[in-house]
Image (cartoon, rainbow, N blue to C red; front, top):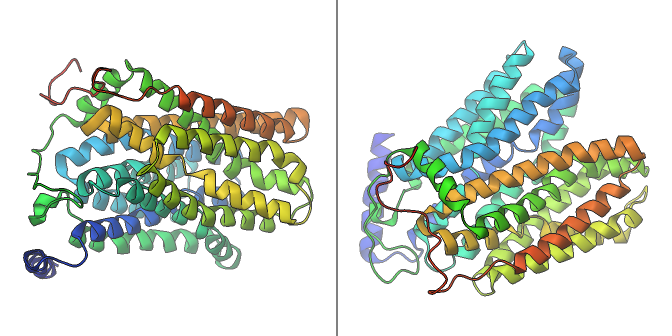
Amino acid sequence: MRRLAYVTEIAETTSDARGPRVHRAWWVAGVSCLAIIAAGTFTTMSGLLVDPLHTEFDWSRGTIGIAVSVNMVLYGLAAPFAAALMDKVGIRRVIAGALLIIAAGSSLTTIMTSSWQLVLFWGFLVGLGCGSVTMVFAATVANRWFVKRRGLVTGLLTAASVFGQFVFLPVLSSIIDHYQWRPAIMTIALTALIVVPFVWLLLRDHPADVGITAFGAREFAPKPSPVRGVARRTVRVLGTSVRTMPFWLLALTFAICGATTNGIMWSHFAPAAHDHGMPMTVAASMLAMIGIFNVVGTISSGWLTDRVDPRRLLCIFFALRGVSLLLLPILMTSTVQPQMIAFVILFGILDVATVPPTIALCREFYGEDSAIVFGWINASHQVGAGLMAFLGGVARDTTGSYTVVWIVAGSLCEAAALIALTIVRRTSSAGVLRTPQKSPDRGPF
């Protein structure tokens, strides 16, 4: 392994000296995509485990839900701390360590015998690992390695997460149907493990590590010194950013984003379609199609973010998403009709398209701390998702249908579209909203 790493370093030096045709930043983006895909696959796996675990261990769905909830909470809370840790020990160590934690936690799940082990292995370990390889990782890579095409790269990396979440869902479901749940978990655990060597050999923390400039940069930038006090810095960034209005506006819109995507589609689309007579396997296929069009929408959103005011993009994306959700109750049928295909395409394009503009706005307002701030804003996304997942089920039990859920979700999106327009663009006279950059290891915490 050391010899291979040494050869890789020599190849990098030689290639850089001659002026490589493909900038090293794109190789970093490529291996980052692999890591994000590997981690993203675990996100939707939880839903496939509920029935098999209930059948084999006779655990209640509420008991299993505790582990899933712990997983989701840590997925959101780990992100800002992971972003700060990347500034201290580097991207490569954090991502490689996170993938190893994911592989270990998921592998241990296959030999568990008690429900508390499910909470520890799947809830804590897998949730912690996946939370470290999220969109804050994408934001950090884009900020460090790219000056031009940041929006496009953010879209590509976000699309990788969606690809891992949805596209492999039918494959894993098929493995569970034919070989039970343990082989499915081991498949994705081995996938995460296989990606680790690629991360260690190809991923670098900063362009200065290989003696080059970031993509699109005109001047060489030295690598910043490691930032100490990870936990204190993460909490301090939160304490400073919550005193600014853009943070609350972005957190509110992203919470609505989570409520109207993860919270409603992952938890309620399939049972809602089943209420109208659509087979569950067909509904799951619709979700997979949404995942495919997510890739198109997110990459396009990243490209547009480099060219259009992110606030306007957020307004348009939320407004169109709201219209699609308001129309969904009249589109539901027992079979797949053209109007349902149209909804899947439109919603898929809009589903995660809000991420690149949100990251761009965080970068505009909070500078070098933008990845940490986005991590906290992403936590609001998970809170919104969790609330909608819970309240949507309550509404279904109370009213006997999901109609009110779609109406509320669509209305929230229209409200988010208006909120996005109220985010004031930062100017030189508007004051600096960036969090303090000096003495990161000191502070009130």
